[in-house]
Length: 107
Image (cartoon, rainbow, N blue to C red):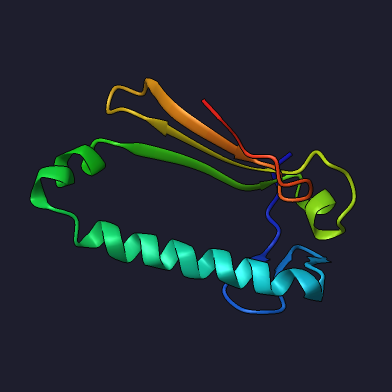
């Protein structure tokens, strides 16, 4: 279900709409942001031969499917979903991560 709620993942307190991440999650959220920034920097200096491959890759990211469950630490059905497609839209790979029970799954 999509809505027009405000989302803040830039700095604590982190929130989606009226739901705030518990303070004990803040270090994990910041660590994930730091890792994403490091990955962005690494990709920016990739060899030119890799540039075309990255340019033709599309990433689909649902940062938290089940936001309410994640922010309240209830339920095991929240996931972080990342999918990759080629320039023609064909699925190449995907990763699902369940942050509450720590079970990554990929295909």
